[in-house]
Length: 215
Image: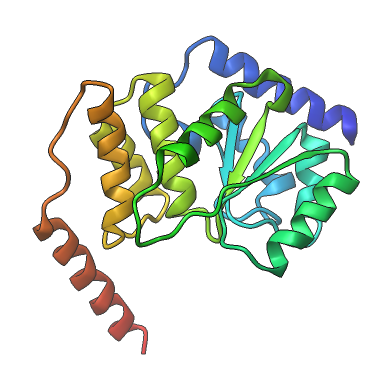
């Protein structure tokens, strides 16, 4: 099993090194990245390979951290607020010989420079790679950090990174997180106009209708 995971990780790495990642939906559509799904998908919600250095998802279910370890992950970055779940994961990763980094983010606030700097430094360090970053559902806080990574490390525009956030289930009413993404591009001298309030209203309206239809 360990050899299987090692070969899967090698295939994903070679694929990205060759540059087959021109589409924002790459992480979802690439068959090599998808090859990991049978082993991780059930234990790591919303899982995807962002790059050879960075993987993403929701909070691992029971046994999920061990599967990530066997797949080659060396470091887990947890973006959730302080609590017992965080401490349990910290203990488990250390027991497995993995690195654990806790960067608690608030849904309703912009990320701080020291938080994004800490995250990017972790991902850039070869000793940490590959890094798995997660929040609770792998949608909002993880999506924000991945978007900032895309902008700063891969040269993506903020709008392209934001579109990818939406594809993973990001909720636009978390305007602080959205602002963090567009601020990252602006800080690099690439300012863009953020989504309009109409976009946020339309999304809320759609979600409300969907909720009513499910009652």
